[in-house]
Image (cartoon, rainbow, N blue to C red; front, side, top):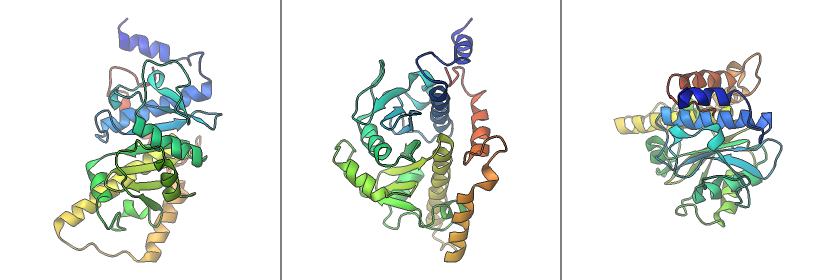
Length: 268
């Protein structure tokens, strides 16, 4: 039996150290990392996705620092608390900047079951524009008056920045543009945070394409912008009969991309 086959066999059961609920979260979080790599939205060993450990208020799972996103598995994720302590024995540590950002938001936003942070060309480009994200395309309208901004303070190594991150995001926004830095989304599930990031990234890419053309984008009336944002928020077309989680339909479809994409299953 080769390693990949053995991994599939071992992945069919939850390791005894974790609850069934945590194992499900671990598998989905590993899938999110693999999909980021598959969609070329990763940045070498940098950027990060975290998920709250089920049943806890102060613990979350995050990628091992130094591991490429395409190599992350459910069992390699590091469990850390909001004080920076690694909760379970691990051969890995975590990205200090990642800890600063994710611990701040997990502590302050209890609705944040998952937080996604990226450095993509489109996202960093829009984050570096004084005008920020513009309501110039359908994807962008999902975030109409629903995106916050946080000024660049250098690499996020200063824990004092956490208070300002929380203040700038506010109590309800699910999207944050880190100026001159990148994008961040959060959701009540891994599926929601991930799909929000995909759409925010697409919105940024389209905006840069429009601006690069030298042409003026057609102006969408404000009432239509708000209508579109509310349509996205309803999420009715993206739910499933057996899964009412926002974005469940698209998330399930995306995970199907992983089956043939890697010899090492993401859920081992």
